[in-house]
Amino acid sequence: MKRLHKSGLRTLQCAAILAAGLASGSAWAGIYNDGKVLLTGGVFTVDGAGGGGAVPWATISGYETRDGINGSAGFTYVNLPALQVSFYGVNVGFFDRLELSYVDSRLSLNLPNLQTVALLADTAGLNTGTDSWNSTLGMQTYGAKLRLFGDAVYTSDSWIPQVSLGGLYKDNRNKALIHTLGADKTKDYEIYLAATKVLFPISTLVNVTARYTSANEDGLTGFGYCNDAARNDCHNKRKVRAEVSIAHLVAKNTAIGGEWQQHGDNLDHRSVNIAGLNPTGLLDALQPVLGSVNLGGLPDKLKQRKEGDWYDLFMAYAPNKHISFTVAYLMFGNISVAPDQNGFYFSTHLTF
Image (cartoon, rainbow, N blue to C red; front, side):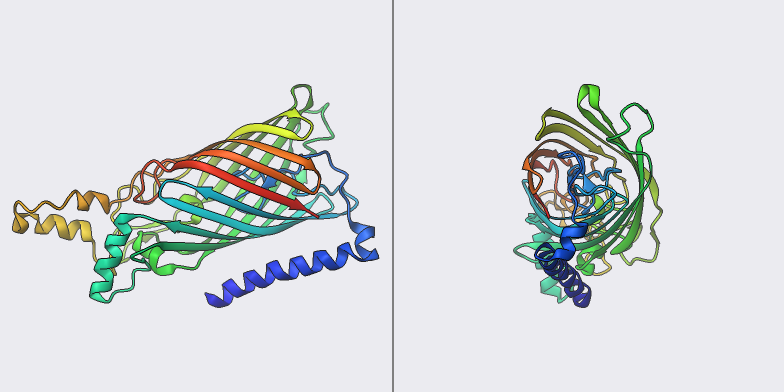
């Protein structure tokens, strides 16, 4: 896993070095292109694809036309009551046809419930991937998107949208914690089909995406589920989930909008486990023995909440084609054992 992490960092380093070398040379002058309309390539999503904050669009990231290449680097920070998430990565658009991307994600869980699990596990000498101070999840996402047909921008007289097919491969680093949360897999792939149309008369972009996935919280807490703490009955059934983005251009360099991303129910009401043991079931079984001892609702606190769909309201501002900023208010609902995770999102997108 360390080797994978290092390879991801090398990807970022190589992309930066390549971009710098091309930008300073005559070779880059021949293929660099930024002829698309401002903001029409989208911003940097949490998966690395060009689109909204969470939903990939059919547009190819960057401002390249069919005559060139354009690259991007992005950073996103999400601050929620019990969670903090950062995403950083790169993507490159080739001739407005193909997009390649890479993102590294870090999720910090400041949850007393998981700290309790960590203390119990440390006492017993068990590896649950939790930390008594701050448990952390990390995920790398590799993506590719291919425009199949249509043009979201330049065929305004047609109702045919731009349609693209994309694929994502996601790999979590903290395998022990993913298994503690009850997921089946720590790495998996996703496939999505996106359709995007810009309605120039009303200055509005509409995007609909169908994603084939088994992800929990976009993959940050793994994929699929296990019915038992010993991981003898696990499932990873993918389903098609819907996603929608709407963005309205209030000025040539400013857009406002909202997104909805459907999520699954793989881990709903499932207990975390400690190295193959179900602490909720164990505490329930011990309750008659403990009698009047008050457990402070601990069994319920170790059960994961119903996973909520993701919603956001955003504003994107691009003073020029080289940089854009996005701020958003996120409504993520329940995430793992943390309820009501709503908060703010900030992202910057550099285009070169």
